[in-house]
Image (cartoon, rainbow, N blue to C red; front, side, top):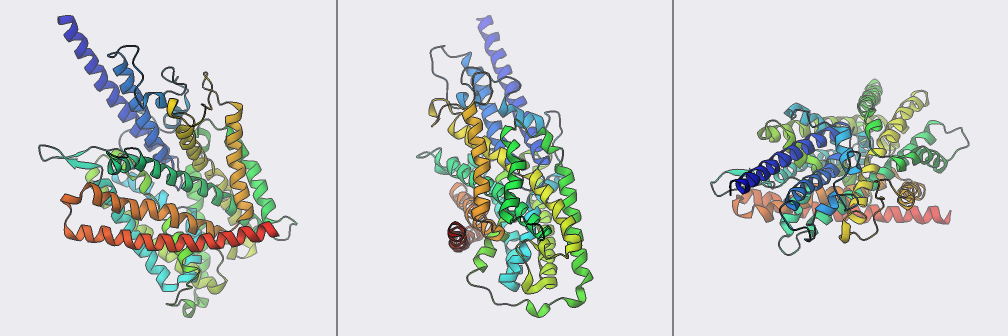
Length: 518
């Protein structure tokens, strides 16, 4: 009896220790991955899944010591293990992403560090398309920049509120970890996995579209930097993709992440240079060109562009879980979105006032040829170095959901028993790179692609789903004004999303048809 008691106590202690270590390691790993992301904050969402798999795997390893050998492995265990036969080795792909980009010994982050991560997510290079949104929206476009900041700040807060519930003692405790957990909780008990799959599909679309945008912007910038060369924009896109093809061989992002801070600083310098040039022409600003009217056909596309520039909700649950003082999350969201709103509004307005009706999709194309080439070369370098981040995250989500779910996988495992990627798995990765190239060639329109992505996944992840989840999970605790805000955001978000998606899709179909016929 004493031996049995000691054995049980030992198992319990081991379980608590392993789960605690896994949670801490996973959270810090996510923080490391985000620190490596210069603008889109794409790694948090994927590392959430990896951390969940890691913790499930550790729990199942413990449970296996207490169940008969003949029992089938529980769900989650085979997903954690690459080949389904045992725990992964130290160089496994899933473990490598987080361990390479963040160490388990890192302390939790402060509110200022969390704010830096949010700023990286919502102040990326895609703000270069905002002046184009003002071109078609005028003062209403400026209002939309402010409105989107307010709404995204609010939905970020209510999304975090969905992570918590009141326990039997009346205490508010965190019962969920990720966006996927919230989605699954909303669809339970009938469809316990449906919500998570919807979020994952939206995430994959956003990641792949981000990769396409990087190829498009690279071809566009190079073509406008050297217009005298006999090289078309399509050819520049092909050259850029050739440089990106080695991404298919990536095992981790350690080498790429070293350049992230440099990319962020370079982008900051570029923004300062653009604004400085615009201020130097302040006497010629065309205030009379800023109107209250809107271009009915193109303004919905501007909505998607603006929304896409604020997308950060997918990684906020991980960020809040990493904070030393989670109660400071609301304050952090307030000042980051206020700062983003002011900077984006000023940048978009000043740039539009400088070039007025000649404003192009990527504002740096309006710069004089003497400095345009230098600025655009920096931006192209930044785009090429940023491409591996969303690409690798998309590959991880696709491989994990389609090829590595054990008996539930739709296709055979793309990794061998030794953990190495099979030849056909590598071919699929190369095919994904080529797919982004084909899209960039046949639809080489930065604004249209950005508007489509913002209207489809941006509005869904930032407007629609958070308000819907908030109403579903916390209905009984909400006051009437919260219900009003949530319903209003859902309705307005739905209208903007559908309108922007339809107009963007029409423009993309026209562009695609024109390129095919040409």
